[in-house]
Length: 359
Image (cartoon, rainbow, N blue to C red; front, side):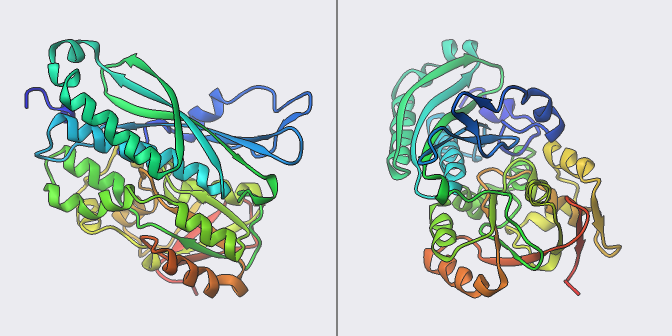
């Protein structure tokens, strides 16, 4: 098929929008209040803005690096990338519940490749657009337009605005000591994608990962709103512990994680033990300086806890009296996982202890 897209792949293994927390903290500067409008939910990757107390607009943008299956034709591969990218941004907006969403596509592609590969301008390009439109319709997301950027690495992303009532937002700032932590998708997409790029994994080994990445978080969001949760976040480029840290810092609490209870995608443990680790995951572990690891956890175990995810699940914080109801609601919604992986505890805000099992 000529020059393969996998030749352009970088080592992130996750949503291309999140390089590291420190870099995002530098670029996210500016006013949080202008007139009647106020940022009511500032985060590293997105925020909600309210101006009248009755409606909030959640703004988000993400990009996705190429993920190409071994024998995929170029058009089918780009359809998959676009589909997963739409799932990413729509799922992140869905943290806020019944959001009305609109998006603008952002496609980055090397101009020389576009000029020399006619498939990008022919039937495959049409198939790509149709595939993206199908997923957008599934997500009930209006595509308003798009931009193209000349880039060596092909990526696709979206700038998204979703509308939701402020009272229905699932924020990251309400966790309380004693609450349980529930994860709705297994981990491992970053490691698996990296293995595929390095020819360390067959296409069939990605089946469960692709199924998970292309599953919307709408069911998990419905379950969370129906039952009532204390806090929520999605798990993407910063990995499980990175996004949990955001909850803990906003809520001024600490957490304990039971590693053996964390759902992991097939093949991921073996690949991690062989050193197949994306660059984003390595950076996440280096940044996890407030995590206390039990001595029995190996280096590969730790990488699993911080693996940079693409279109990961929701991490829900639920009061213990609602735990059973939430698990039942998630099972009813057929989320990829419904696992209790830890609990919120009193302690220094942002600190996490990870052990095999909770004491």
